[in-house]
Length: 515
Image (cartoon, rainbow, N blue to C red; front, side, top):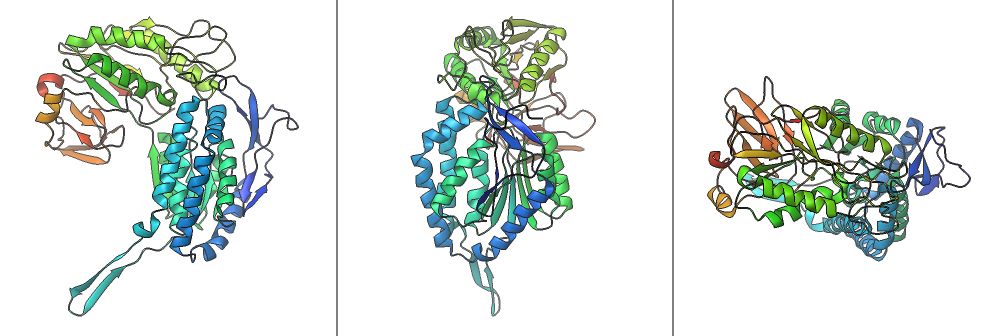
């Protein structure tokens, strides 16, 4: 699986019990720089036996770490925060090299990770229990919070810094130990993080890193010593993790891919809206669950919005982010780029008009491409791609390009949809009077054929006559034949559906099956 020369390209090791350990696996994969294709590392696909050894070590360490005072644990995290701040630029460089993000964006991600360490360092307050002295006559009730044991984390490639820091700082702050599996596509960053964790004074065995793929995941899900599993990634893998983890009586949180929708009404500030939707979509090259999937534009401003949006997309610069801080970086792997190209071809075959095509002249090296815009000229099913579709920017001679596409849907009078894959994450941009009118309304189940606006809504269970579904944001269409969900981003900003502006027959904005 690896074609790189092992003598010239560094091989990633596992970190178990406070020591760097060479993997016993015979399977390795290359880690390329997605901007230019240069192989920067080889990562082992660790075996179940290696993973079990890390789990056993974490379980042994838990016996002592769980007895360390919460104040001492917090002090280690405060020290780690300072070290992360000191090396922020270096961490950003590592992210750029293995993920492809522009440096400024990578450093901003490091900042998000640091914020999670700051939060975990406040654990003395967060762990406080409570008591009630008179729950009944002469009966007192007191709550205590105890660590649960060995925890685990399965992390994605799109945020190699932020997502692991959602998990391990809080886990160890609470007195647990952890076995963490980084993405095999972005394994380098955790090497540097481990060095800083050790420098901060974390005892050996509290945090263990095992590189790999499915064998590591399966051991974490099935080993009875592991008490909890945290996962962020694709929907298909998330379902697998949740079903198998809970079947083995583990606590599981599985956060998976999403689809977000932005609605632009006629009194919106078009220039500001274009700027924000571009930022929301091009951030992380579209590789994030908070990116938008669809833009619906009211008829009165649709032509103006599309023209300005296209002009802005053409002006975006992109290229090798390890050489220059371009606005937009590459997709993570070649197969993601090719899948994106296929979605564009499928859109054209479905009857869409290609407004801006960036596929021409794409070089073999690198995984970049400029923007592609499709304008749908007839109603019907337009299947939106998943997380690997990318919007993009201007092509530079001699450089590759990565991108996505825009679809303009021929909706009924009053609404014209502009599905733009992975734009937004900002929620629908509603006019001020519309926000005021519905600020206090509770979301309700949409009638058949209607739309329900949910701005960045998470975890709300909507109930209606004889049907229910879970809305996690964007525009929900009534289920056809069975319950289904449309997932989006995680901030509860709500708006009731205004039939004047958004009620229409069901548009063809269907989520494609998981790849």
